[in-house]
Length: 311
Image (cartoon, rainbow, N blue to C red):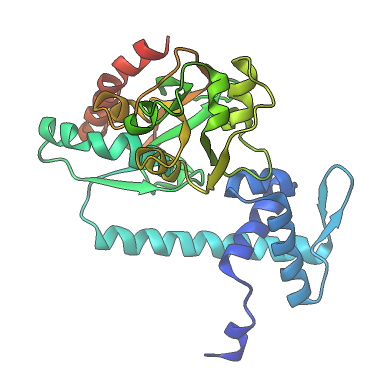
């Protein structure tokens, strides 16, 4: 390998630097890239150490480029865009033309993929490529046709977006655990005798998905469970619940099929609405495509019963 290439910083680090400079904030850049603020700050510091220059002036409320940082950011942005175009070109050559959908890993595995056979039954000639990634994809770049996003009430949703459904939180558990007479689940306080399954969130970025929010909303703040298990992805939480390893905080609509077929049950009538939900956005280049129109129409049909359940 050429010695110059050996000195190159990690591509992920460069992406972090680009986002930090573009947004003038480690915090906002970390949110965009689904990293912790401290991890992103360390990445930029590693680049600065490797280059031997400071790229940012750290101010109390914002970041500002040093002259070297501004020049480096301009060059890096140009080359990252070139890499993205090259990757898109290769990907397009590898895949035949089809419908590309991006969404979060958990939504893809728990909600979208189990239902895709029904779309294929309606559109047998349609080719669908699911890109599961927790990072937000820029639809203007032309890499995807439809994005299904998890948003809050204060999010700015573009005109024409499909509002799919909201989100409801409720404890769920395998039937074998729910029916164990030694550890009944009649009221929220009974959770003290059970293992609670958590989505790991060390930085507190998703408090509405935490057990503390549900327990507080349902009259059991400060409850101490018999044990806890933590997982990095939500679909892992649900698989652990199906396996009888504890009680999960279920998210409708993601767990709708698990409740419908009996793999999970909801022991309590009480619940908690997270004030977040899912929307589908169509990329500007794909609005007139027949397969995209058919897919969004199918999403709306599949979402109808979920909207009724979460009202």
